[in-house]
Image 1 (tube, rainbow, N blue to C red):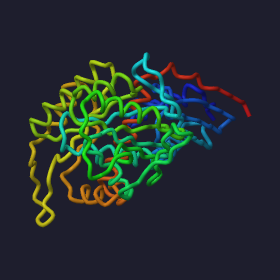
Image 2 (cartoon, rainbow, N blue to C red):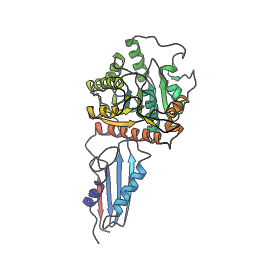
Image 3 (cartoon, helix red, strand yellow):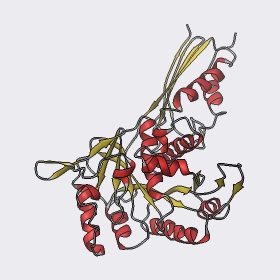
Image 4 (cartoon, one colour):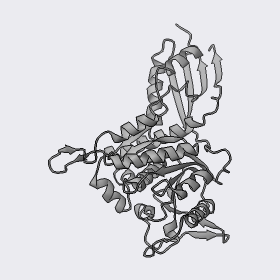
Length: 364
């Protein structure tokens, strides 16, 4: 009977690609421990992103592969998710109790950016992460509605200095809408808005977050540049629709983040296709393949392509976005895949040298 070796174990693991990292677990630096006791093999992997709905299936697949190796009587694979802190701008101080800030941005309004931000936050939470969302869309804040928080919701204030975020669906939520009257529009110039938002971000008492999703105002003006330069962002997600005008504005968004050295994690294309609820006829109402072309042009991922769906709109308006309203639906699964890929891209963007696995070999 063959004696199993570390090299054989690693060679086996290298045959499988993590779909979110686009690498095998060994090359991606996920291998933390290999324990060989005669014909029994135990492997421990560590993912740097939230993957609660993925890791057990991933572990099972790798376990079956190891058990097919000559000389292996039994194998076990343990997969842990350990989320580190990342920020693109070295000169910007980190936020207290926040590991990673994800900016969700769009070049123009009306492309479903806020809905994407809400479902991204909820999907990350479903994967086991501690998540907050900041509604920085100061002229049209909508996260309170999407998270089902009643009109007039106000945050508690701690020590006359800190806003305590409101919790909804397992996510910590903070919005300028909590501090203003719903019937009174915010009529402020850019510097006032930038100052208010920075104050809101830095004076919110976030509670030990793995990810803070920031729903950015649409556009690429002074407010967006101030946030991009003064908030420690780990990466940005650009939301668009396939139509040419939206894509033109989305390109400006990509360029803006690149100028301030913030990695663009990928593009989300909303309203990509409409399927008639009566006859099933498929139409590309806003054009076809625009998000894919934009992603290819800038060498980033197309994170998701979502249909023009009444369900997405109704669920968000009703205070329960798709990820929690219909968690087993195909659309919810697209959001979960998007969330894992966003987390994986952040983990890769500032990846340290992989830790060497601890190898223990016994001749029992």
